[in-house]
Amino acid sequence: MTDLADIADVGRDARRGGYSRHGFDRAELELREWFGQEAARRGLDVRTDRNGNLWAWWGEPGPGAVVTGSHLDSVPGGGAFDGPLGVVSALRAVDVLRAKGFRPSRPLAVVVFVEEEGGRFGVACLGSRLMTGAIPAEAACRLTDPDGVTFAEAARRAGVDPGRMGRDDDALATVGRFVELHVEQGRGLAVPVGLASSILAHGRWRFTFTGEGNHAGATLIEDRRDPMLPASRLVLAAREAATGGARATVGRLVPNPGGTNVIASSVDVWLDARAADDRRTREVVDRITAAARSAAADEGCEVRVTEESYGDTVHFDTGLAAEVSAALGGVPALPTGAGHDAGVLAAHVPTAMLFVRNPTGVSHAPEEFAEAEDCAAGVVALATTLEHLAR
Ligand code: GLV
Ligand code: MN
Ligand code: MN
Ligand code: MN
View (cartoon, helix red, strand yellow):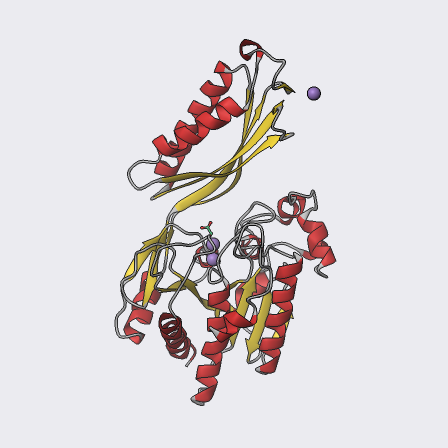
């Protein structure tokens, strides 16, 4: 809690409430700086990888390392815990192990992945996807933020050479096992600490509806081709399609040009859809897409659909989960609807996630919260896990 208080002023969003900290923006760069100092103060060796992810090494970097960490960026108007809790807990876990005189018999590292939320460039887990090759460097570098700044340019300004970005087998080869601690994001955990069992399949789709910009007063209703109409029907279709545990959300809708007395000429709508598996996620998105196409046709509008990112269901390594649970004296495992860098890493190395209880189930909002006692239990659980894996 004191560590989170340390960074409590960084990236506060006065307009939205909470925090807006995005990949390579001023707030995230300040937090990265803070992380570097905290790690150096502990005698850890801090390095930046080819994709801009930060690594703080305890021991010489090498294969088979036990790696833990999370991210420091947030969604727009996000909470204080999603991401930073995993980073500060990792540093504190190192302190706990040091204080008890533990000497790891394999290298141990704390990692900070860049742009996990995709809050600035639209694709979540950008740092871990780049590192593992899940997104090609050219595709990542072309992504733009709402001001038109490319990811490549933002990286360059942060001192990271976009020309060297891409699948980083050297970094990946160092990771023997990965553990991410995270605040739980629903109301799924009744005890202070648990483990993740799986992550829903999920992705992001962009629908661009194009109609005819015109005057709000002078244009007769029957003469309009207003793209806000099919956009609105997409929002309703998303709710209707999300049955049987699936989730579909429109959290961002941008009319162009966006004037009160202007019929929009186009509207961009971003859909976030998630379900238990690939088939059901595709079904949900197909239903919404069909509704969007038919609504666009009814209004004489065009619609273009782009899949911006996608990841299939993640099943965390059951052997590692059993090992960690045993080391912790038995903790519950639960599925989650939230995406994580650990989900990206899980396709490459045995990976586990520790969850800290969320008393209200609120996340991706300023009200996100975890009790100090539960956070402390999380640090102890993470330290115990690292000790077990690195001994
Ligand atoms: C990340 O937190 C996500 O699930 O979108
Ligand atoms: Mn998040
Ligand atoms: Mn997160
Ligand atoms: Mn006028």
